[in-house]
Length: 118
Image 1 (tube, rainbow, N blue to C red):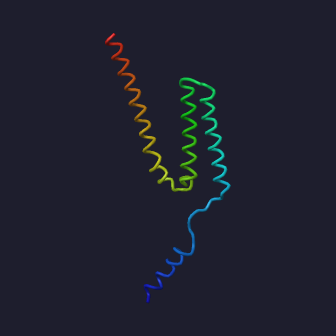
Image 2 (image 1 turned 90 degrees about the horizontal axis):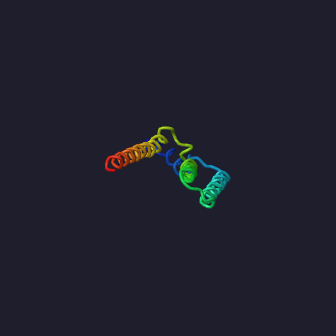
Image 3 (image 1 turned 180 degrees about the vertical axis):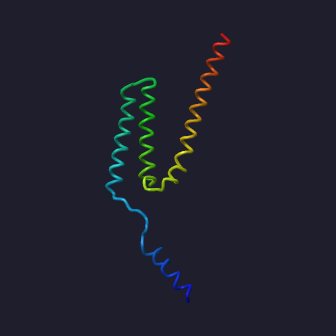
């Protein structure tokens, strides 16, 4: 009898009440609109016929902004604990830093070999 009394409150909260976070549709529509604007800017970078580092810098910045919005709002990372956010975001950032270091070392090695063999 005691076990049914202790399990009854858990059953009512699990089936009857919703304890999760609910966000307004307006928030999602605003984010969708902002994603549309950022995608338009990304298209305009190609339309403006920009070249070199400016083009790639703008495209990458817009891409990171769109990905950040998607992760923050649609994946609900904005409302998660800081430890979970760090656990999900730090490894990809560390990989990006390591990839940048590898690219710099590859350029150095290529230029050194180019200078040595010419």
